[in-house]
Amino acid sequence: MNVNGLLETILNFETNRVETGQDYALANISITNYQRHLATYNKQIDTNLLRTIAQRISEKLSLGQVLGHTTGANFVLIYPCKDMAQANEVLKKIAQVIQDIHEIDGTPCTLFTESNVTLSTDTTGVAAMVSHLKI
Image (cartoon, rainbow, N blue to C red; front, side):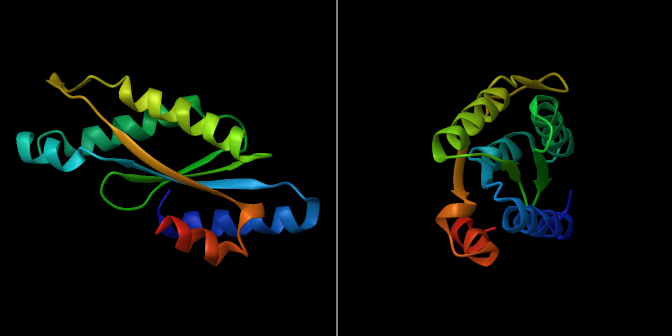
């Protein structure tokens, strides 16, 4: 999902929160050593690396969790959750999924992630959430 789709999805989650009280998390997930892989292997693995990351994350998502791609090796995950402990547990699982990728098209790779998350209840609206995560 691209940035426009992400923004629309975030607004839908916010509308649902207002109407039903269902809180949600908005997380930014970055592959911290992505540029190093590009420098080492040029663009040889770029597209397949991003595709593999997105595919592996998508395979682990539960119903109601939405993944999008912003720029470079940055992904956004939007998902219902009740508190920060639950939000962090989801991110921990996603980080492990990414770190379990060791090869792309026969090229060895080791991936590291950095993630930030904010809860709908901890901010003053969608703009504050997006701004907090620097999406």
